[in-house]
Length: 423
Ligand code: GDP
Ligand code: IMO
Ligand code: MG
Image (cartoon, rainbow, N blue to C red; front, side, top):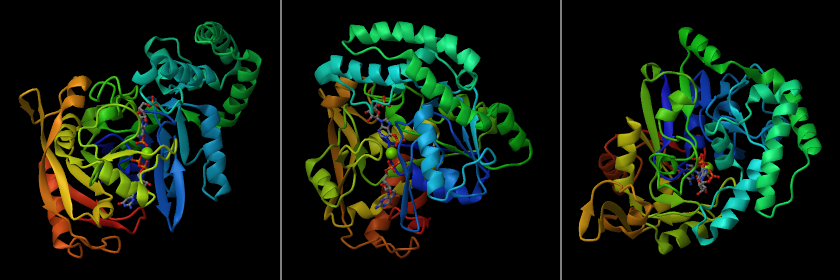
């Protein structure tokens, strides 16, 4: 399989976790390179659901080495809970199959508090963040005042650094009308988590390159999606990291010349959770999917906003990520739709766009230009091969792949491993 970067080609929640789990059968190493526990990646194996927030979705395969790279911001309390949760369910999580970068940045409680307070201050212009402290943690990293995992696991370093950061952050919290946090409490909780995590901490750049020299096949697990990227997304309604393919290199220390392929994951329709423009948003399809109990956020439980497939967006995603192969998920979500719309261009202010305008205000005013497809109106969730799919479903999948400018590689017709069709 060589070294593959897997990214979300839309606004997150495309089904990356499921596809990573399927592809991990052929991978030796899975690396998370960006984001934090704002992510929620669902993997269903033999009917049992696991939602992963920080730990790579390769963890369900015992032979796989899972790595949290330097580009991730890591909430150690959340991570310890996630590791304990997996162990309770009989999943192996040891320093032999799970490793953390010593240079990943740490999310502290003041980051979470500030995340929430800034959203309140923004009022109706809020981003709709997951309130996991992601923006403030990446902010500290960029401002060069963040603490890294190497600080977390060394109490002699943690104490003075945390104490200095808490003095400033408690002032900030007070200015937002939020109660200051107790240093004693945070230090106690974080040094405890640091002790727990210490055996898992390594120089992951050296480790990954050792594995590359040994011929390992690696999968780089993207979090969030292309239009949540801090540079290429619908700024400011984005997350705070580079979620696109380039982030896999900076967030892991594996160079672009060592990467072989980019897989883009996209739903057969569009969803977004949180605020910001979504040109193809549609109430009917939202009601349909929510009525089936689908499209509720894996991290916050919020109802996802839903709409028709937007090929202007996914074509743009192919461009900025260099997507070679596509995995189309949730094809079965359209099984009952009689006429399916696909956005092929936007109109705004007398202008037609065949790419995503950068200005979120302009994007919010864009009116989609649709083409229509006849629905197949047949269940697809039991189909095992591409030929078994109804002809109209095949035509739809091929058409949206073509519009996206990449090869159709996987069509997914259900959340389970066995509901995956290799094309
Ligand atoms: P991720 O963040 O990209 O990993 O995606 P999430 O796990 O947040 O959301 C995707 C949802 O779709 C999860 O509930 C998956 O179990 C589910 N899913 C993935 N692929 C399919 C599919 O082909 N069909 C159906 N019905 N569900 C799917
Ligand atoms: P996965 O990896 C969907 C969204 C939030 C909000 C914006 C900023 O499961 O696809 P943040 O907490 O990151 O500051 O929030 O980004 N968001 C996601 N939406 N899937 C995700 O991850 C997301 N991670 C963040 O809803 O709009
Ligand atoms: Mg998700």
